Amino acid sequence: MKIDLDIQPIGQERMMERLQALQAQLAPTFQLPPETSGLSGNLPGGDGLAPFDPKSLGISLTADQAPPAIKALIDKAANEYGVDPNLLDALVSTESSYDPNCRSRAGAMGLTQLMPDNVRELGVQRPFDPEQNLMGGAKQLAQLLAKYPGRLDLALAAYNAGPGAVEKYGGIPPYTETQNYVKKVMALYNAKRSQP
Image (cartoon, rainbow, N blue to C red; front, top):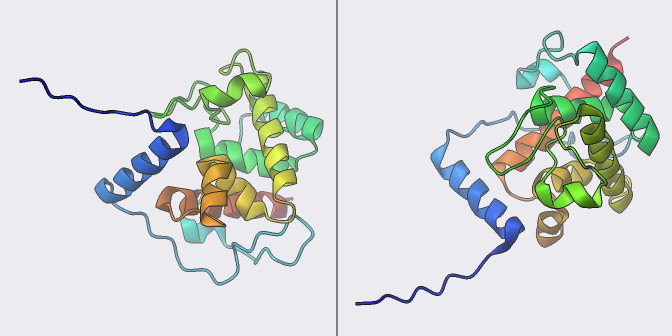
């Protein structure tokens, strides 16, 4: 007996949605404290970012510092693409904990966890090279900040889940991973901006 399975490719974005839904079902859910205004997400200088205590998310600022060589590359890449170095630093901390050899189960690579599909369009030839990876991540972040002007929360959600998911849901997708990601990056960003 022959069974004919009609299996169609579903694409990376749909696959990520399915993986995140499965992960949410199987893994214990990390619940964040409710916030009333922290995700309104204006860019620096706006009124929409509520004061945030990073300790409320269990974020240790002393344990969350980039090694000096990586920090210098973060600053260089951020300045190259007009991104706040503290924002890029917070993203790198969240994405890879400053590990240039980091690789996710989904195939994301390096400090900024670049996806294989994005590497070429970002001009990155060696995704595990810290400088190239940071340049690519800073470029992608700058593009998303320009796509969602004044909406840091949406730019971060698009970095994590893809712009398609943000468009589909008309805002931050209802994925626990993405919602936690946005809150964590914004918390780290606010904490890093307030450091002397």
